[in-house]
Image 1: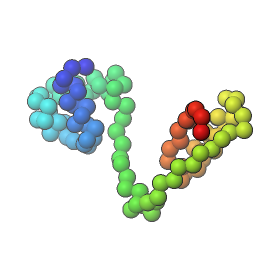
Image 2 (image 1 turned 120 degrees about the horizontal axis):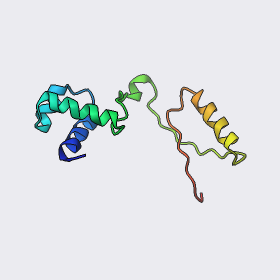
Image 3 (image 1 turned 180 degrees about the horizontal axis):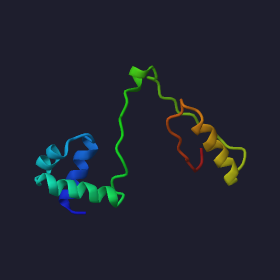
Length: 102
C-alpha cells in the first residue's frame, strides 16, 4: 500500500462504478498501471467487492427501525438459530452483535 493505492481506494469508495480510464486520470496513472493496481488490491482482499447503494424510500421502505433482541441462551446454537431466522427475513437489512450493560 502506498499513496497511489490510497488514492485509488478513496476514489472507488466514492464512485465504485468509475471507469478505469477515469480512475487512472484521477490518480495520475496510465490506464494499464491503474488496472494492475486495482486487480492487486482485489486479489489481496483489500477490495472485497462492489455494491449498489439503494434509495430505500423509493422502494417503499423509508423507515429505519432499530430493535434490541435478547437471546434466551448464550450457546453457539442460540446465535446460529437467530442468524438463520434473520437471514430468512427479507425485511431485515443488518444485524449487529452488541455487548455490554444496557
